[in-house]
Image 1 (cartoon, rainbow, N blue to C red):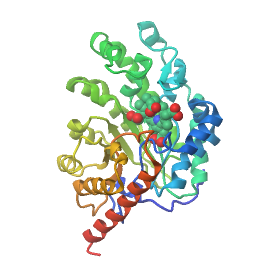
Image 2: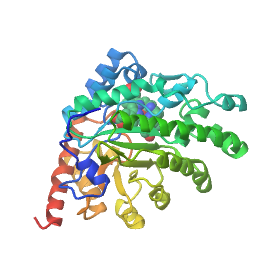
Image 3: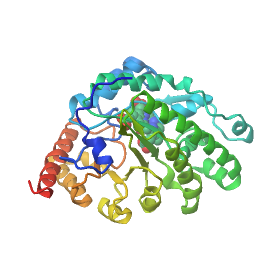
Length: 362
Ligand SMILES: Cc1c2[nH]c(c1CCC(=O)O)Cc1[nH]c(c(CCC(=O)O)c1C)Cc1[nH]c(c(CCC(=O)O)c1C)Cc1[nH]c(c(C)c1CCC(=O)O)C2
């Protein structure tokens, strides 16, 4: 497949720790409910999965935030739960309640029946990736993504979101054999899924370990980190003559930063509880860092947003060789005023351009 040439590669360069003229920015959940145009398209599509499963709609909402803001990357519009949906668990998004599976995986029988799905059932995702690449016309790179094996397993076992993770944790402690089988299937499926996204045109990939941080220290190593490593190790790392960087984001994972940096990924996402400078020092620039503004800063007045942005950039420190991708510490709130995002993007670009200029003596 031949796609239009890339015009802005600042995001990819920063991830590979190559020199950049300014700090690139994108936002987790940048295509979402804080944008009125997203809500309009979603209403036309009828449901969340109606949006995600139609490549024209998926492409339209992926591009919406790029029409408004000078973001340095696009992220595929989809969800981490498409993979268990393709396994036959029956995904539904109940209005106001979030995702729900009709057939959760709770008993030995359910686990025995589980298998890596035929990637043909996820063809709608790969078609959306290729369409978005064409429509982006090389403006910025496209990020593909998947959930970590553990985070997907949380939803598969709980059947929905959870406050205490009682069912999945009960399984880890009482039937680790069942948990390991689910995690191995998820890891194998995720390798195939991400490689197919890369094949279809994704220029970087991100693994969301949103719930790894709820685990006890030892359980994290065994049930989350070990399987994220299997995914990272199975990925295709070069396409179209350039590296395909891999980002791993474990929410609440800063205390395991050294181990995450050793997974073989190119970059680590951090939530707002971490100090970028402290983690950078600890991992000795082994990987790039992505983050980590508290999304709630976007509810403050303009001057406060600008001040908090500068603090994050200063915390990372001198960027001569890239290594920092600005992001929020988690997804943008659906109640965020879009004008606050314009302020955020402007401050990241103008302030970091000054810093980068100063660092190179210009
Ligand atoms: C845990 C998780 C999910 N999905 C995802 C994660 C990992 C990231 C994280 O920790 O937030 C990842 C995800 N979900 C979505 C994207 C799209 C790309 C983007 O703009 O970032 C991405 C990268 C769209 C979405 N996925 C969802 C929405 C809101 C959906 C709507 O229109 O109803 C969007 C834009 C729904 C979703 N999907 C999921 C939940 C728990 C929910 C409901 C909660 C919520 O409303 O935020 C599962």
